[in-house]
Amino acid sequence: MTILRLLRSFLLTSGAVVGMICIVLFAIGAFLHIKPAVVVSGSMAPTMPVGSLILERAVPAEQIGVGDVVTVPRPDVNGLVTHRVVSVEPLHDDIVSLVLKGDANTSEDPSPYLVRDVGLHVATVPLLGYLALFLRTPGGIAAVITGIVVMFILAVPGARWFQRSPHTT
Image (tube, rainbow, N blue to C red; front, side, top):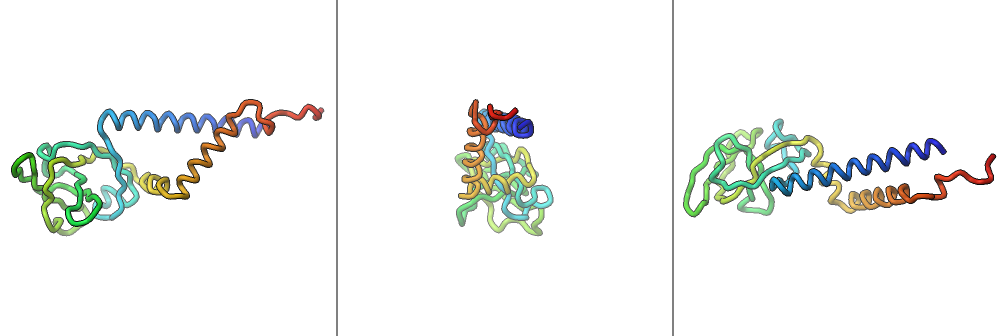
């Protein structure tokens, strides 16, 4: 029974620590206007490998300079592109024309991006994007729900499976 108690203590403590980290990161992100995104192509390798979680902060495009890494909407299809700024040209009404290029690409993107706001790259966490993508799937959601149920079961005081039987000597 001691092993079960240690396991219970470890799981509850780990769950509490992970929960607090999530709350703190969410609060910091909300306060600093930082959003996550997942790298799904190799165009920014090795700086941002596929499966990385990147953090970005929304800023006006006029604050962007050559060499910055930004995330902007793709003009022709749904989705986003995260590439390095090659040139910046202010236009009108706070609209800026950005020419971008992926670090692993041999040429610039085919067309400039006309934007008012961009996501400015703040940080990269390799491999964490895979976890973020998994948690959005039905299997990931089921895993989270299962984890919550297990934590709840372990946290119930006086649960039968953690008590000694009165019949043992």
